[in-house]
Length: 113
Length: 117
Image 1 (cartoon, rainbow over the protein chains, first blue to last red):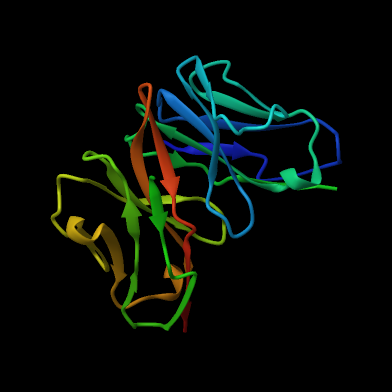
Image 2: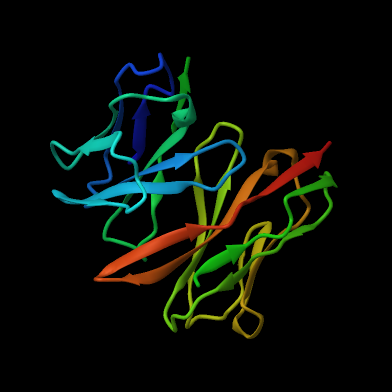
């Protein structure tokens, strides 16, 4: 089945220690998104890639970076995680930019100690 | 302002009861899209439905049905004969044009549905 895969499902890191979350997709979609979702809140868009074009949301902290080496993979790098970065990180894909439907992966739950 | 309001934070129903989740939206756009997603405890956001602003037909899919009313800016979701597996957080979302060729997907705060056996 075509799908969006996120690894790992659970990630524990230490305060200030860089961490990378990964997302892959077999849907061959052009757009990949990263969302941050804190407990009992709605998902918040961090950035997206349309093919190789990167679009950063205005309020996304510089601490968050992303890479998309090819169509299938996208990475979220958190350079110096703080306690406030503990959250669920959701990857999503769509064929084209919104309003196309976005399809989400299972998420990676990040804990910062 | 573009906004989605889900006034019900949490709802509990007994299995087999019907339940309606409310969604009210605000947008300046004449063309927009509305979505419902389900987020079970596992965390994955599961797409349920997409509706564009020009299509006010109600939709039914099995036990799920959606009532879109532009006059009241509402897009409500009804689950008939609820089951324990329906327990999840349900998000209503709106896509609107945010300028410079970009669209934004904005979510409501979600409604947590608990179906009690």
